Every structure is written in C-alpha cells, then in structure tokens.
Length: 393
Image (cartoon, rainbow, N blue to C red; front, side, top):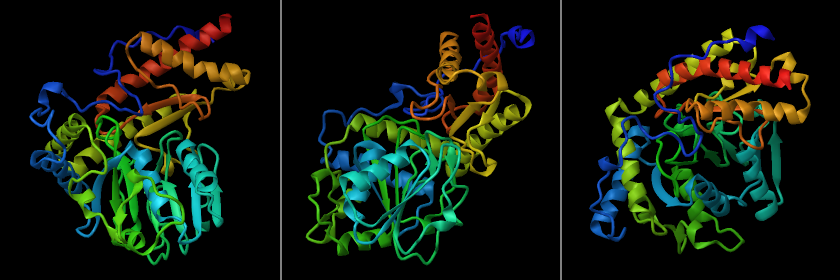
C-alpha cells in the first residue's frame, strides 16, 4: 500500500488532454480559421452547397478506397440516423441475426425487436469484453453488427467470418472503426459512420455506404411499416441517387460540412488511410506495452486480437479493488478520471455508463500517439493516489 501511495507525479504531460470517445479530439493544429465560410448563409441546394457536399463524398471515397460501384451519401442524425435508416429501409425481407456485445449493438437489437417488431430475429449476444460466437451466424439471413464496440473496446478481428457467398445483407455500424481499422468492402453491404469519431468532426450528420446488393434490396423490397421522410432512400421503387451526389435529405449544417472537409484534407496530407491506420496502431502499441508492465489494469477485451485501437477500454484487476463493494468499484475509475481532469491531463475518460467500471481512452487518428504514451504514467499515478485515499477513509 505504501509503495503505491508515494508514486511521484509524472513530469511529462500530453500536449492535449482530449481523449473523449465522442465527440473526439480535433485534428492536430485545428483552428476555426482554417474553415472556408463563403457557403455560410447560402442554400445547401445551391451550386456551391452541392459542390461542398460532393467534395466530402469524393474525398471520403478516395481515402477509404471504396469500390467504384459502392455509393456513399451524407444523411441526417449522425451514425444513429444512418444505422436506423438502414434498419427501417431494408430489414424484413429475410430473417435477421442481430449481434450485440455492448451498448450500441444492444440498442439496434431493441430497435428491431421492439420498434420494427420483426418476427424472425435471432439475437447473438456476449458480455462486455467478449464477442458472440461468430461461427454461428447464418448468412442466409441479414446480419446486423458493430465492427468496433465503442463502449466495450471490443472489435471483430477481421472479416474472415463473413460469408462471401451470403444471401442476406451485412449491415455494419462502423462509426468508431472506419478510418482506423481495415474494412473488407466485399464482405460489407451497408456501412455507417459519423464524422465526430476518427475524423474528429462535429456531430449532426452521418454517412451511409451501400453496396450494389444493398441497392438491389432497396429497389426490390418495400417494408410494411410507415417510413419517416429522413429514412427514405427510394422513390417509385428507384434509388434516390441524388443522396449520393450531395443532395441531402434534410438541411445540413454547412459549417459542419466545412469542418469535415478540413479533416479529410488533413487525412490526405498524412498519407490517407495508411497514415490514419499508422497513428491508431501506434497508440494501441503504447497501451499494450503499458498494460504488460502495470499490474492493476487490464484490457476489457479478453482476447487481444479483439482489442480496439480507438475506444480502448481498461478494467481494474487489482485484487484490492476487486475486494471493494460494487459501489466503491464504480467510484474508483470515476475518482481517477476526476483527478486527471483537475490536473488537465485527461478529459472524459471514465468508462461508458452502461459498461463495467473502468476507463475508456480514445486512440483514434486525431490523437497524437505521443499523447497516449505521456498519459499512461499519469494513470498509474492517479490510481495510486485514489487507492491511498480509499485506504485512508
């Protein structure tokens, strides 16, 4: 006990304390002065407005190396809106397998069972820290899953488990994975994300990506339930292709669009997708080295192959901490995060409210890997301070 209580306060601080998992840190060197403002006060339907939205689409497609026959469009209501647009528009044609191992995956299960009230639904669930049995997924059915569980720090390791000859659609919420993890486009029919994750953009808008198989579903199947306007991707049985050319369904924030363009330009400057991946992998490598040398924390992901390199979640495994009451165990990471916030070393790193008690550190591409490295000794220090306070009380 005495040894942990006398840890010296680290002398090196992260250059930025922003480690929130959403909205996430702005790109290095970001300033509002970098944003173009001539579109502000103009219609998003104007020639200039459409050009700016098309620029987001074109730059995103290029960075992601999207196949030529895949479509990418800007849609309302962030990643949540994009996911629900896909669920409401495409499900019901086949049975569906719903995969859930954290909070957001569980939300999509609730949508499908309690809101859409589909009859033929299989739910494949796992506790925080684990994945469901991927080998049991039936690809004759539609499949809905998150690539990276933002609130659990657990991701699917690759796309090998997805059938190439599937009959159903794969609908993937990739919001905390895209631009940070390699996605196998040939295995994915619908992919959704938002700018405020790995790109560090502002909220309010989502992206939906459709494969040719997804477009075929939209044009051949009409759901039995009423379709809200912001979910409609077809008219008269045909895809509204303007969505994928900058003609958004509702009015977007053009300031947010300019911010997204700024983030995409930065991504291009650092080497595109490979440059983004390199940064997130470096951050994860720093975390892994620290976990190997520190005896009180562990990755919430039980299988190292599934550990996230963006929403990196830590649980406390010190036997002393595990002997505390449930309320005290929940208070421990909260106290750690409050202490580091008071030091202006790390902001917003307490674990997600529905997750097991722990810390969640964002390691997406806008975070400097050197800042992750600088943060880790502070975690040891804060844990020792809080542990000593608990022992003294």
